[in-house]
Image (cartoon, rainbow, N blue to C red; front, side):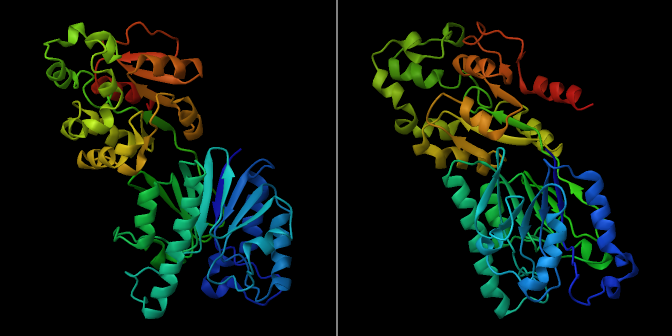
Length: 417
């Protein structure tokens, strides 16, 4: 299955609306689009159509254009554009066709590990044409986008693709309600259209920003060919013992127990094996009792450089921790303070990371806990283990051991050549 996207088809089977008034490049644009569609799309593929689908003024007229799309291969996902006056409701439109035609607004749909979310969007405040009338619609559309993403997250999804008609942020990265919501949820991709002509193409931001890839897919920008949206490889990264020193907790535990154990004696990740069970109940609730410890933690050398390098190369980075969900806000603040994306933090409150790794489509998991490593290896994941005294007993064909984050950067340098 492959993912494709295009916007602004501006079909006009039932109305006289020649697009050549916008330039000669639009001559025979419908034939160009469908010729490319027929050539590249297979039945199992997905095509996102992000608005301005038909010039029709009512549904009866629009159906002639929709029928043309229906006959093409692939499952099609539609978002309303500002010129789609015929659009009634997503629910009503979906009843006109089978499951190969999916109409979206505020809801979300599932494709593999992805929740597909979206809304039309609207003119953003930093546009010179923005006025008071726009403000009400702008805020309403932002609310709809958030509802779509919240419903997906509530149902357990953590990977998103956002479809919009309007660009959610400009090339200068001036923040908007849309971009703030996108930052909060951290979708892999944001796909939008609406912009036409050389003078307008660069209004919206394109590329990677805060872990999200933005795509302009207006049909004339794409020379009337569908753009393939390629899945980005996903790396899951543990926090404690992986981006924080594996032995960071020893001074705190020594002080609590009145002993002076050094890291050479720290050969088990279970604190009771090293310190006994005198404070067992405290250990089990350490996350919520000793929150200041987590706030004082420092990043290991080269962690930030590695994360930035990987994100720049298009990798999705998720910080997956067994920490109690009650200190999720502390964890996110610490991640942000250290220059990383807090909205990619997933606090599980449990050591079992296999399910979330599957849900995220994880390609590589960077971990230190021996129990987690064994579970991930058994489930078929590639694991990079930060070498510690307490995890050297774990072996496996899909396990790579490293001493530091500089070596991790080297692994991906070799992989990405």
